[in-house]
Image (cartoon, rainbow, N blue to C red; front, side, top):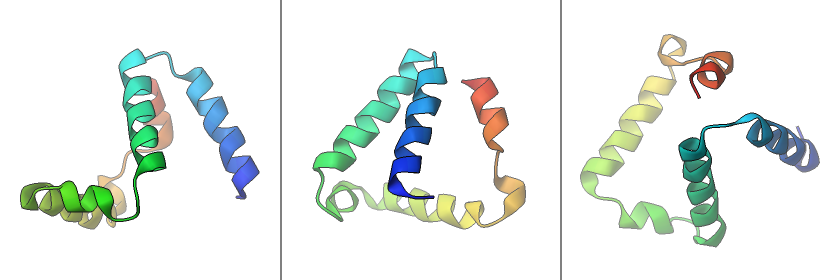
Amino acid sequence: MGTLELKSDLHKILDRIENEQLLRTIYDFLKQRETAKEGQIWKTMTEEQKKEVYLSYEESQDDKNLIDWETVKKKY
């Protein structure tokens, strides 16, 4: 999937989301990533937060821990 297709798909997904809190969270995340230099966010995290990121990554490697996109869309 190329950049143009990714942007198009993101726009479509965002247009379907009605949950303002979720939209605000996505906006804040993207805005922070847009202005952050690589590694900057990681440097601001506590050791506990870093451990949580590592744990989440490890858990995501097992398919049974993942939630399919359709289920997430229904929830939000």
